[in-house]
Image (cartoon, rainbow, N blue to C red):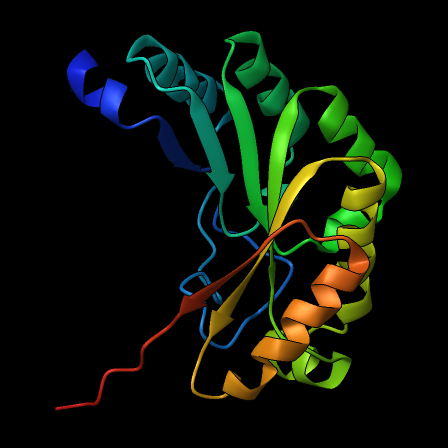
Length: 189
């Protein structure tokens, strides 16, 4: 168990709600890994524990949290416990303004969209899905709805030349911040 003293120093918890995803990114740990979703009852139990131990923020991730059927209900439950709920997503589902507005209305505090490439061709090569423009529209929807957002990008050996394009594209769509994560490929021994 986490002590209260520990929770006061750390304010956020990541909660994995599923392993399913609507993409098949080349480098992702969930690629093809289908496991059962976290039940809504167990998710609420986890939220209760997180609240009990004094954490303030819950970051929902997966797989892809927007593929988690009770996502809206879980965010509403998180909010009812006076916690801030956020998601890390590929953004595909968020191009639907009504869906995104519903997430905001039930208490979603912020969204991190992980963009996979700087063009439609590169995006499809990385993910197996023609969703690049959906992600750009999603970033625009977040800006329009004034939802706190950040765009993240995983930098690999294959896409180092994309970093400037990613920053410029996401800024033009209204992203508030852009984070870059470096995925290192270790040599085989």
